[in-house]
Image (cartoon, rainbow, N blue to C red; front, side, top):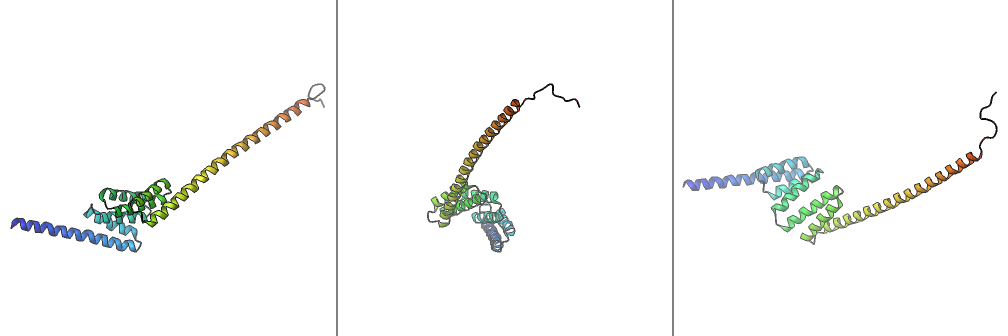
Amino acid sequence: MKYAFLILFVLSALLVLAQSVNSFIKYGNQFYNQAQFDLAENQYRQALAEEPSSIEARYNLASALHQQKKYDEARAMFQQITSMSKDSSILSMVSYNVGVSHTKQKKLEESIEAYKQALRMNPEDQQARENLQKALKEQKKQQNQSQSQSQNSSMDQSEADQKLQLLQQKERQIRQRSQNKTPTGGGGSKDW
């Protein structure tokens, strides 16, 4: 009888804990839907304090952080989910969101790899495919710009060399003229 009471007590405590975690997540979702991302973040953090293994609370917290442009923190939360879950649909969403956060920070190489990872897990993810294509186009555009800039800078250098040579040639001509016009006569100073 004593053990039955103890088991009942533990189960009821777990039930209350689960309800508490769910209510934090529920209120967090309400704040998130109202674009009050800082308040949503607070609710999700409280849910995680109650149940650190909650993938839902962690994912929602990462999304709230992302909305607040706290991309590094959001990615850290998303990365924690990858070690907690083996569900390919969750991991695909996580990889997609990691790609978006890298894109926002102009880290194209990392975003491209994240989108590819999302597509490996879910080849039907149209948004990941579109974002991958955009990131690849942007990467190609940047490569083309850097190539044209390097060509321009080398052309500028060659133009500068040519101008320097012209100036040196003019300077020699001026020296030769000044040497050819040496003063004649006695001395250099006039007595007035």
